Structures are given as structure tokens and as C-alpha cells.
Image 1 (cartoon, chains in turn brown, orange):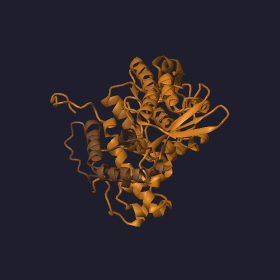
Image 2: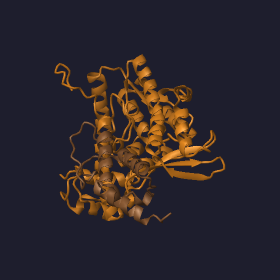
Image 3: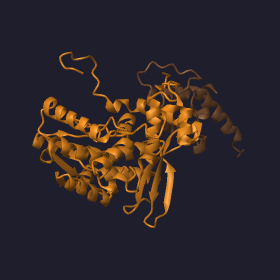
Image 4: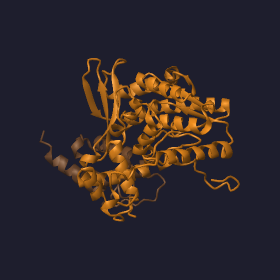
Length: 86
Length: 339
């Protein structure tokens, strides 16, 4: 969803690339663009957990789930799809 | 060079061999001592050196080199224990000072840390994730992930008085608060070192080895602050070799590197580095000499994925800790003052 990508993009701009002229496209790798360091990564995980109401397991903290806006969007979609109906 | 700063494919497998970190210890000691004299005496115009003795191999080697370079009478040692320091550290440091005839003082910095709120701030953050954490519990931070393919993250490990261990992933606010509180220890130590340096008109010795210096394993304006860092170019393996050559006691030469900062025993590799120091030395040397990661994997008998991770981690830590080395930035240069 575009909403997920926009919220995460805004979080990154407000907190991790302040004053930086870094374009964050949907597929931009946060690691390759040096947007995230180790502290930035745990801030991102906490933001995702608090904003989207999910609990991120340690084994899910993989680049394929969190290294780009598209990956986070895909991760959240899979997470929601796997959640048992209430 | 690729975008991570790693030179790829520039060397053959013959570059990695058992003696690549071998050192002509007497020649190296002489070279360092000569430079120490030039730097402190001629460039910095100080009359001797102050060195904090932790009881570890790095500060012991620096103390021995300083005693040889300046004469023991111009070296002042400091032991600066606090509540979480191992009692063995003080014993080892005292032994080194005695061995090299270095005048020294022991100053317990725990009351200062208490007054600053170091322990209170730290314990408040710990209790946010472990409410049962009490005054008689122990704690440490450990790095996790990374080498198993996930991002690095930090775990808090606590131990109850009964010996029961608990651990959990640390949220960023608590992680940063624990680290910030703990950094008081290195900064207070440095403040005491500079008091004595000012009093004696001495320079302050910093004791990082190459692994620590390169990878930013120090506290800015804490143990990172110094006038001279005489072994920052030496890999840890070489520091151990120099220690044996200089006659540092076996109990120091044989001890694994420890942070001696948290109340639970904490190796440097579990807090910061991806591998134990001897393997990290090889990986850093190989990275610096353009050896491909797969050759490092074969030499160290680790997986190629792990070697690739270590190379990336080296580059990432260099980037993340660049600001620790940097002087304060200016909006525009002041040309009259050299950068």
C-alpha cells in the first residue's frame, strides 16, 4: 500500500536523513544508500511495530523484509495475511 | 574499490598465511618509543605522560613502551575502578605499574558516577524492559543478528541473584540510554586523566589497538580522547606479541579482551565485533589488503556468507563511527587555524 511506503518514507526523512538530499524510491536499498546504521535500523523496527501494530520477530529482521520501502510494504502485507482472523 | 570501501580481488591466496601479522617486536618497540619522545617532547611540549591502566593488554603495553621511552619517572599511571569493574583488573594494573616502576594512583570513580546519575539512568532503562531488575542483579548488552543474515540488533542480558539469565531485544530509547549512561565511565576516567596531565604538564596516552581505532570502538571524548595513541596502528594480535616481548605478565597476555564496563562479563566480540579478535584481525588485514572475502572464509574456516558479512560490517562500522574521529565541524573554515 502507498500509505505504508509514504509513512515510512516520511519517518526516514524526518529522523534519519535530516537535511540530506537523499531520494528514497520504493526500491532504494537503505543499506546501499547509507540511510540506516545499526541504531537507525532498530529505530525503524520500532517505528514499524508501533505505527502498523505488528510484532517483528528477530528472525524476520532480514534485508528482504526491511531494506527498502517496497520490502517493508511486502513484509507487512504478508504479516497481515498470515494473521489469523479474530 | 566498491561502494562499501572494500577493495576487491586485488590479491592472491598466498597473502593469507600464519605469519602475516608477525612483528619484529624489538624494532617496532624502538620505533614507537622514538616517535613517542618526538611527539610528546618536541611537538606537544609536555614533560611526560599520564596513562590509565585498565589491567588489559593494550594499556599495559602502552605503559611499558612509555616507561622505556621516557623513563619510569616521567610516566604517571592511574587505576580508575568503579562499581562494575572486575577486582582482577586492579590487581593486574597494579602489577604492571610495579613491574615497570611507574608511580600511580588509584581513584575509585564510583561516587562520581553515582553523583552524575550513571547507575540511576542505566537502571531506569533496564527496568523499562525488565521491571524485576534489582540492585543485586547484573546486566550487559550483547550484539545479535548480523552474522546469521539478519540486521544487527542489541539484546539486554540480565542475571538474577540466583543466577537465572533473561534476555530481550532492546528498543532504541532504552538501548541509547544504557549506552549513554555507561559512557559516563569512560568520560569521567578521561576527566581524571586530564586533571593529572594538567597538574604535571604531561600528555595523555590513549590505548586503542588498530581494531578498536579502525572500527570506532571507543567513546567520543571518553577513551577516544588523548594526545597520543601509540599502538593504534597495531593489530590486536601484534599487541599481544609486543606484550610478551616486553615481559607483560602472562595473566594479561593470556586474557581474552573484555570491556570491563558491564556488571556481567562481556567479551568485546559479543558487544561489538563480529568475530573474536584474532579472526577479526585477519579479516581486517585481509580487507585492508584487498583479499576477496571467499579467501578469508577459507583461511578462517567460516562460511563465505559470514566472511561477506564481516567485510560489510567492517565498512558499515567505519562509516557509522566516522563522526567519532572527527573534529567539531565548522560552518566555514577559519583559515588561520590549521584543520
